[in-house]
Length: 490
Image (cartoon, rainbow, N blue to C red; front, top):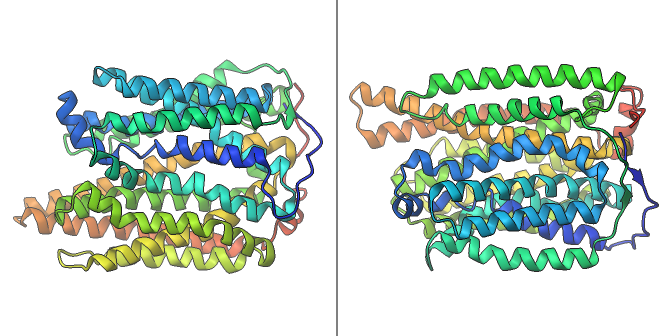
């Protein structure tokens, strides 16, 4: 299964293609919504009369839907034109935003979030696939630096933006503000986005669709139970095991379809060593970022007494630095390759998370800000070259499959990071409280241990970074012959 790629439009040196600019803007708007409700949990509980566990589902359902839908996007993006994919993604997202803003009950709000996520799940792979088609190889680092703003900074800025908006009005305002912005971006995109590939009609294996939804969706669903303290951890483990089993069936099915038909997700992408290494590093990076995003608000609000606005303002400089450095990181990558960026970036992640293991009731706020900024800058230095190397190592017919797999694993990594740090913190806190330790010192100790576990995991990124090639050309040479690269027939 492969889309017929049209001749690339000429891209003037130093210019970002209009189609990529619009897709970056649209992707930023839709991905921002993944984390924008984190600070609104107390408001939702009061307004809709729901428990904290129920309120958390407005974020969990978003991640779950993304994980379940993204595997289908590889097939969808090859079946429709660029404009059609854009219209579908933004149309679905706008529908979900309207539902969420006007939701009379928690159930309708949850439905709105699921619809929003379905649109977002199409937009992210669309951006990635379009970029590697229309941007010349020698310029991808610079352009990818701008894309970093959408795929990495948007979720990092979500809590900060929501903290500001919640000072003005209710949680509904979070959707009301997004709605006209998304509508303008949609109309502008429909006028300006050109088709960069011709659709190719192909069949879809509905068994793969069902197993992918059950596997990836179930895995994310189960992971979010692991951090519960109300006895549902055992249920979560059972669901995770079932999800992993479904994913195993999905993998076996795809391997068979690669020989006899059209796979939903072409696993030959994993035969490219550079792509596989990039996938691992990006997943661990997202795990670290989302894990810290959960722990820091808990520390700053529950233990240090800051308001949602103050918390948002404290973490905003790190998110902004990450976005503003994106273009510079891309230019450095184009000129010097990945080594001067990825290795220092991985080390910076370890140092920042290691610094957070020393949190206390008296840690200066400037130190918290500095550690968070170091983490965000390190992620910016890592994400841009790693993504560019990984996607650049794939042949064109695997672009949509590669971006689909990357998007899926990002959601799984985000859910795993959230569940891991909350589970470690809760278990440690409960153990110390049972031993007679006061609640606040016990929770602080649990938080330190959670940051310690995240630090240990990010040590793996240093090893992976050392194995990555310096440039895309080297990646292609390194991967040559490592996989069967012939596209499947339709």
